Image 1 (cartoon, rainbow, N blue to C red):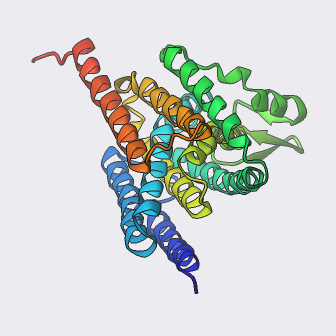
Image 2: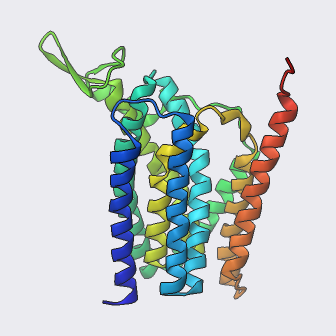
Length: 312
């Protein structure tokens, strides 16, 4: 067994065990996730991600480990921004709190499968057409610039979502039903419900996010091992992160700007390789950490100044 095969085996064992613990011990069906439980679950997934970094360092070497950590932090920070869109989607569909965990679980597992397919196709295309990396770089620069200058308070209109409109057009839907079933029967006719709609919208929305995040991780590494593991660890931590950030949307107003700077940086890093300028992976790691940390701290400080606590 090669080092890479052993690493995949360890990753698979960790993943199956973690899902069993998360779903079997930390989560119960149709229950509301408290802030305390969300904090524990988020810490659980983050520690797993960092623990896998340590394993990679000893098993596959420093370079692979730092590439993984950089990619993981990139995907994790992008996930935080995605969470805010998920919160808006849940609000639009009037989903009851006790069903949030179930919907996120199904939607995120669908997203993991779809991302694996996307990554497999992406790696195959990059290996055959190396110039695609520079297309990815251009996408990241444009996306980052657009994100930096977009106002955070410009809420997205879920009703204009193309997938949502297609579902309403071609499927019989009962939008006034807010229970746990995906389909219901009314007067002998079968209807889809908001539960079904929100799962599809969540999964397809994550695919759109993947159009930015997967090129971003390719900018850091083209190793299959790094791309797959960093993406899956970050995506599986989305569910607990959702509940942790659900009531803190207004405290991260400047996070998109921090992410935007990172996207522009990794995009330009791709173009730098074209002219023979190699930027060490640890520099990418430092830039990612500094940008995201500064954006979070600055957002929290601004939030405190804009919304000071009222003394009793």
